Image 1 (cartoon, rainbow, N blue to C red):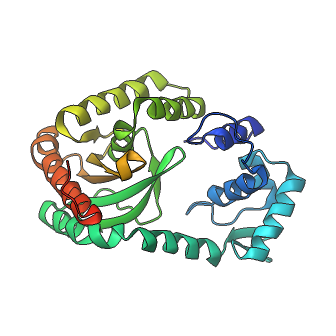
Image 2: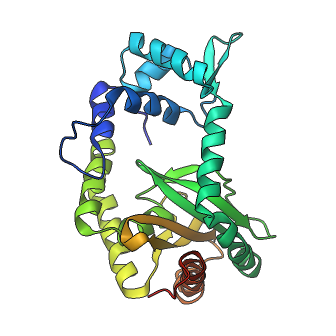
Length: 277
């Protein structure tokens, strides 16, 4: 997905919140600081103020003040020899505290690994992060896989089974808001993407899972199932994927899809203490 380097895109991201109405309590400075942290990735471990300004649309003088503040708080670390910043230990600490507070990984991991071993696929749990899904837990089978993704990786929401499962489980109005945002980021060929998401919604309604066959990576096919908690206020998603040559549509629909639905139902029962409806 192309990087955004204009102020309009950043403004759009800051406005993409649960409530689409203006919020007088919204702190723009805080949102800008967090947007800086989001720019870093495994491919962009070190970024300077100029690069951060270009990718967030935030003026460079403001970027300089924010990076100094974030460095002082431990969320960024300055690499003097490069003249650039990298994520600091404070970000890692926050991430692990979040994961530990949910307890979801501990509940899900043994079920995920059991299915990974039985199917020789990769099983992942992910959470939404703007236009992407972030992997919170991954379990791999023992055989060779076309694509191996680790915890912390981000994948496109609209083009993956995990992301489509997340979108399919949302209320229609909330889904429409997110799709409008995604369209603004990737207007080219949007009609194709929208049709794929609409098909995923129908699949979820009919089967309880969504499919993605070579949409994001032509060599990988997967099935996704959402995990809906707290009456729908908290939605995450699981996927099960592997080599497209091995995972035919029939295997996805008749085997892996139903098995992943069972996994998610079991996780939901253990997390909530109630039988899944």
